[in-house]
Amino acid sequence: MIWEIATSLFGGIGSYVIAGLGFVVAIVAARWSGVKSERQKNKVKDHEQAEDMRNRVRYAPDDSVRKFDDAGWRDD
Image 1 (cartoon, helix red, strand yellow):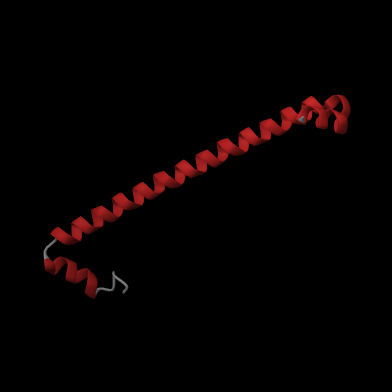
Image 2 (cartoon, rainbow, N blue to C red):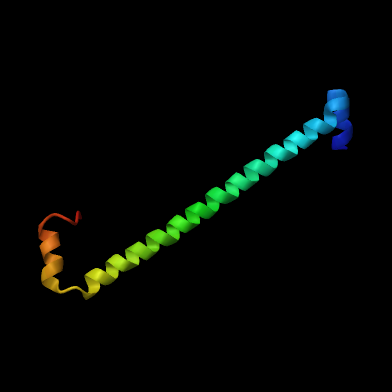
């Protein structure tokens, strides 16, 4: 069905048009997949950094944490 529509619209170059569209769709799909995996990697990295910060504050002596709070390091 698609083949008949393409050949009727574009004549002899219908197969090239279909191949070109397939190529464009493949590139967009690959790009989208890469962006999605990059976002996932960044999210995991952010969660790991947040966990490290929580552990540093949780196990740090109160005086060292209070020093940073009083110095304006933390905005509430």
